[in-house]
Image (tube, rainbow, N blue to C red):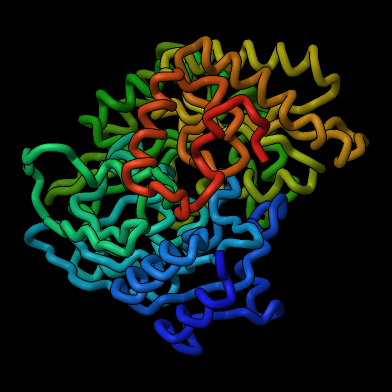
Length: 477
């Protein structure tokens, strides 16, 4: 490996703007969002187009240099962290919206496009790109696709994978696979597109994509309800899907702890109810057409839920501002947790019907093993994805608490596995979940993944050390 020679040749390809080797200038790219990891890459490379990406990868393959692709650096699992012999390949300069086609209901974009910009470009032609998550103002679509991002609208529209029609990908040897088609039906052999979505840059680097658009909802109704149990929330979910004609776009669960954290610490968060309740659900009906009917459908749903004893209180937003205020509570949970000390995170999913069992079992297990720890579950109940975050005991030492991260993960993830769930619902694997891959994925599943990796990246230069644990029993580094 000759990193210095490779960097010299890479700079000749990307120019002065395309390579940062000054530590001060590179610093914003090097620290992972949660602060758990720091890259030690000798350079950050910022290519301007796909041809430059291909040339860089060809050079890195020739010189044995590892390449860690990076989007907006908003990942939560250490997937965009580089080691000393690796370069960071940030796609932020490749940020063009290439085409918006309202008749085909598609938008074609480069991988460095910020998610919010794609949403805005779709809106200019009265279309919706429904992928929406907390980091949408800074995350890039290439990273969203590489982690198969989820967010608040999965119940209605699906994950990033479901929103993608075509891709352009640069392979490990610099070859470009370009299939930026807009077809809804294309039954011509293996679906190569799905290999790269969710692979976190370990099989190829996504440089462009064709994404699905949808009609812009014109009739949106938002409500928050209070409940005594998560079982009641499941009953409400069933009622809401039926009452809305399955146009329910969001169904977000908040625990009492989550509500308390948000209203105490996050600016602009106000509890809409006069007294506390064990659970809350934020739900959105989103339809269209010339005759508004979502309000009536939501009111009918609420009436049925009250009559059945599934909910104990509720409010329907009377304006866009009131709807935003309700959403502010959901968004505030994430930022509020840090004010309560260290938090151990879990991004899990189980079958929707088993969410109540998971929450009950996990709560009991955590109470036994971590006296005083405070579960703060919240998230996308409509698709079974719960962010089961557990805040430290009041007054505990944050560092000592975080040192038991793996112990708590094991407890929670074992329960998830027993319920037929996943230890990673939407955040990906990166570095921090490699041991979970080894523990919970089947041996044949891991073997098939390794065969694919070997076929597409035989020298392991693409995001080394991510997604797949070592084939032997050596510890993950």
